[in-house]
Length: 318
Image (cartoon, rainbow, N blue to C red; front, side, top):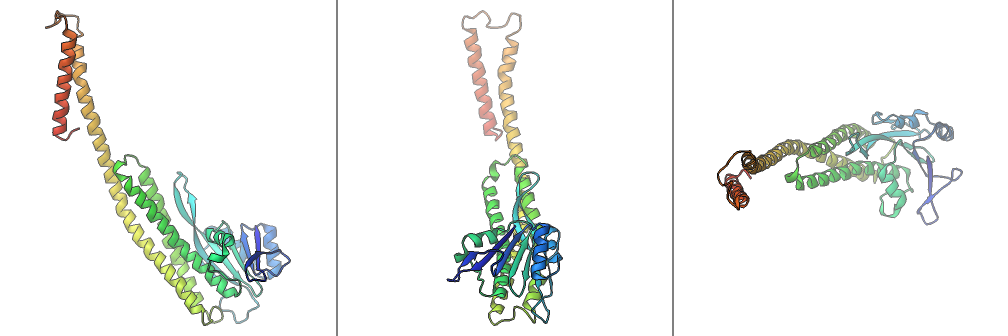
C-alpha cells in the first residue's frame, strides 16, 4: 500500500497523488509491482524496499556518508508493535522500519502498520513532524521510533501494576503466562535498542547528512529517548524477574490456602456422614425408641460441627 503526502498552501499535511510532487511516501507491505514502480521512479537498489519484508532484518545504514546528494540514503531501525502471542496474551514484537532519503522525497517502509505513523496521519498538528526539510522529517521519525519504546514500556508497567492488584487472588498460571509475554517483549526491546544504537551514532557522526546547526539538538533528543528506553527496559526486566518469582510463590500459597479450607470443610462434613451412617444401621441403637430421636441426633450433629468449626478457626485451619 502506498500513501502519498505533500503540503498544501498553508504548509499543512495533505494527501497527494502519485503524479504530484510528493514529499513523503508511506509504504506498507509493498507488492512486487509497487516495489518495481518505486525503484524505477527513484533509482535506488531494490533491496532498500525488500529488506523490511524480512522480519529478522537488522538495523543498518547505507550511503549515509556519500559525497554526492543524487543517491538515496537508507536507514533501517527496529520499531515495537503490539501483537497477540500464540497463547492469546498481549506482547510486543519488533520489526524493521526503513527510511529512504532521496533528493526529491522521503520514503518510509514497513511490513506492518506503525502506530506512530498512523497517529501522525490522523493528527499531524500535534506531532513533531514537518515536511519542510527532509532531514528534519527523517530525524523526527527516528525520534518517534525511539519514543515508541518508551510508550510500550509504560504500558507494560501499567499492566504489571494491574496484575499486582489481583495477585492476592491468583490461583492459576495465567498471571505467569502474562509475565512471560512481557519478559519476551523486554528481551526483544533490549536487542532492538542495541541494534538501533550504532545507527543513531552513525547518523549523529555523518559528515554529509544531518549536520545542520539544529540537527545536533534533534539527534541529541533521539539519543536521550533511546537511552531512556534502554534504562526502562533493564529496570522493568529486573522487576518482572522478581515479580515472576513472587507470583509463583503467591499462587502456591493461595492454592495451599484453598486446599486447607477444602480439607477443613471435608472434615466437618464427615461428622454428619459418620453419625448418619451409624444410625442408619439396621440394629438396635441407643435413643432409637425416643419419639424425637431424629431431632436430637440432628441437634447433636450441628453442635459437633459448630465445635469443629470453632476449633479449626482458632488454629487457623479455616
